[in-house]
Length: 156
Image (cartoon, rainbow, N blue to C red; front, side):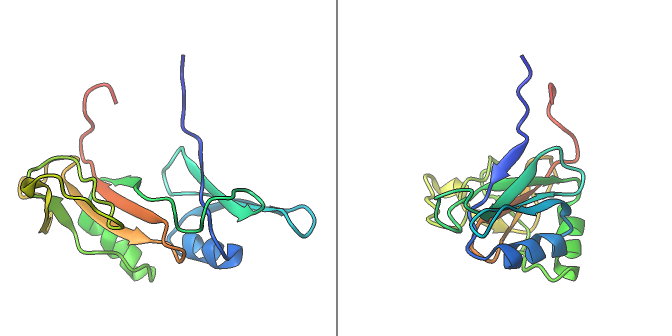
């Protein structure tokens, strides 16, 4: 059986502001459709992604900004960060995990379980795939993580 993640619903408070933010970040607008005064869907896709986001009015009861840990995989973390900054997106500094393991802090309410799970400034020294990160938020606080993956793990 093939199961493909296709769409993630993001809760936002201002649809037009969120749409402008994601278009500025380089996401492709796929759909902006309203039905009446109380339902609107805006569908966008990150460049090169098979998975999209959707937000709007009447789509979810989740609190705006409550989605965290959305990963965007990039081949070069510093280049991706520089491009987003050039587009006007506030992106955090590049960092890596002290223990060289999967980053899971996601900024908001971060819990460090071990001392070796702290952020260390700069990319992972060996630039190994899956080891360097940067973060940003949309205007409502939904949290995104850029993760550098130059070479995929086997089976991916």
